[in-house]
Structures are given as structure tokens and as C-alpha cells.
Image 1 (tube, one colour):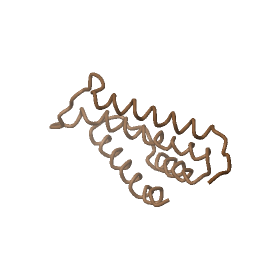
Image 2: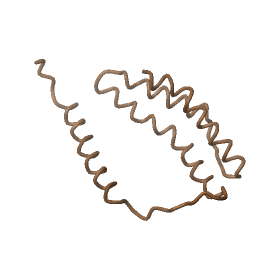
Image 3: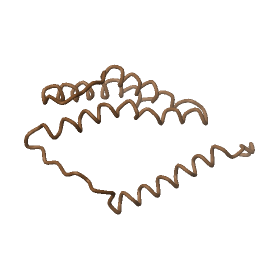
Image 4: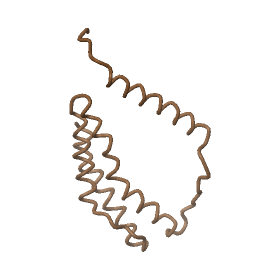
Length: 119
């Protein structure tokens, strides 16, 4: 609950700064910081729902994608910012992808199993 509460202040301010930076750099930033922050906070609050409805809250990051894209379009226009384009995944990233996929697979399997009522 605290994460969603404090997100109101941090996410909105961050998105406003990203949009302002993009505007000053001449990069396109066609998103509304207020709408994106509101959607993020509302979906983050859905994490308090019972199983399996809390899974809806996993979509909260989708409201941040437009700000992230604007930031990525702005970086090349700023002078003095070193850029390195990734060509693929590193070994560590591949390990994390495999472990994360296995974890979420177990979560989804656990949610689909019946609850036997034992404690």
C-alpha cells in the first residue's frame, strides 16, 4: 500500500521531468504525465486484491512505457551522454530470463491448483 501511495508523488514528478526534458531537447513526447501516473497508481493498488485478481496489477508498468520511450528518444539529442546500443542479451541477462520464466510458471501453476483447505 505504501508503494502505491508514494508512487503518486514520485511517478508523476518523474514523468513531468521526462516530458520537460524531451520538450527542451526537441524530442517527441506525446504522453500525458497525469494520465500515465494515474493509471500506474490505480493498477498498483489492485495488488491488494485476492488471488488471482491481483495479477491485474502486473500491468501497471504499461503506463510507464510511453515515458520510457520519450526518455530513450531524448537521450541521443543530449550532448555529452554516452550511448551504447545493445546487440543482444548478456549471459547474466539470459540466466535471469530463464529463472524469471520458471518463477512465473510456478506462480501460475500454483494459482491454478485447487486449495485443499489444509494449513
